[in-house]
Length: 302
Image (cartoon, rainbow, N blue to C red; front, side, top):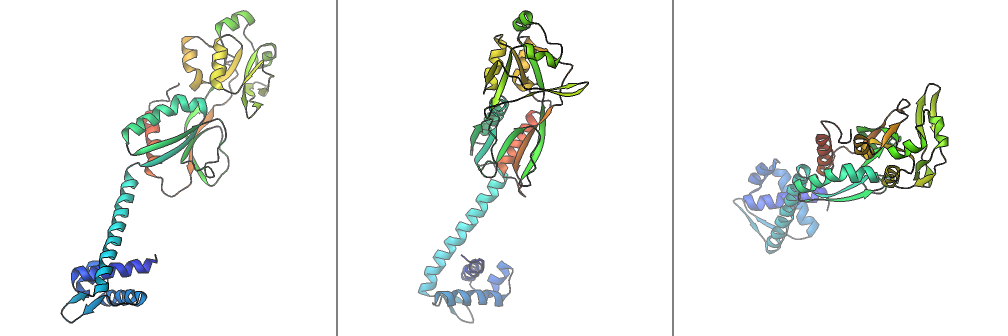
């Protein structure tokens, strides 16, 4: 429907309700002439007379009565839409589409979502826990959690919410039987457990006095699951290189022992990314606010 046609309809309904062009004009903030022209345009477009006009009052024709009932319903529907949209601007509704790395998401994002959905009963969530790189725009996600440096993409906004610290470690039993490596180069003499990502092993990074040392394996065991790597390391299979958000409790209770601590590489950012829009929807804003609130006193794995 053309925008000016909506204005003409509003003028017609207001004139019928008010009983005169002058009072309708005052209600709409228009001139009497503008109201009259709107109604003439509407009659010309429809090819029928809608109002009988006298110097004292307006009265509806039969066609005008039918038109008035329909137009009043149209305007009522538009007001309902406005009210619904206003509610959605302040109250999270609809479906939050979220993507997060598998292990990180299951451990540290799912509890936040649980709290969010319990607080907002009209909100739903669709979550993809995957280590696969997702295209936020093309795949229709509202928001995603990414680990590592951001890509240059003007379509998205990014906000760092925490950092990922990687620790090289092994079980006490493994270190007792095979010894503790004193330098990254000594890893070649040990059994190592590597993460497969898109069928490629992820290299290990160490900061040494000679510069960055990259250990690329080969791993004795290569797995596509961080959780499986953790379990294998705890069982004594070998040395693993994993983030503290996954093994923090194991380090604290001694089931895994850190090694090569004097060669740490800089931590990687954990970021929220979302489409670059002027206004964030209430569901995205509610998720971000709750996540920041939950981690305001420190992220849960440190």
